[in-house]
Image: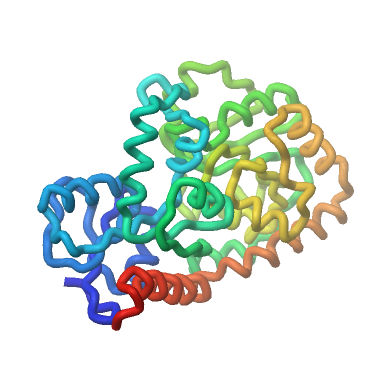
Length: 337
């Protein structure tokens, strides 16, 4: 059994097993296991990374203790897709309309949660539209060891090289389709996409010659990629945050992000002009504007973006998470010790 949080036994159930989310769970002494339909009883709090509906249903049918509490971490595009009444079909790689019944069921289940943790302001604003129970907003962070390495990188910033990092197959919320369209209009700029599970997209789309997909890389290999890039561009739609944006900032890369990407709040603290609307021409114009700057101007921007990344320090944000989680639990139990 996990350690106690004021007498409460916690089980964290992951779906994607994001390392940041796992560290969140570890910081409050939770036991950890993969989400499934077979969940052990005996825990006071079930903390889910996603697929919280399984826990709700299991509790409804008596497979979990009736008085157990369920807290979900919202850090994926589910709320954005609910808001837009759409869903991504992983089989054909296309966006489809979400049925009214699906939306109704989701809204009903989400409000059976006892509490919610959401990452960033973007996700918080979406959450408030559909969930009416107690919640806390938290900030994400960069892995402390990787952060140290990133802060030492000196990107060249000379050549017209754009970088994006993110795994598929959901190319819609990662904005790959938009990035490809922008690349077609800017053949003099090289675009590098780091990430797994894009094979189907590459097969079904005409990828221009100035775009290179290089698959997944280890963190040790990423330093060279950052060093040889000049600009980071993230055109995600519904990405709750986007830690790769923070990593690029730490490596000294100025970042252009779509206004539908949660990490815009980090970029905004440096320069709100680097946040762009979903408009291919305006995105292209912003990229061109950046590459028209002198090397000295780019270096100044590089320093500003790097400095802002320090806010997303692992120790600082884990301590903040523990405080927020404890307060949420306290509220769920009506301030009873």
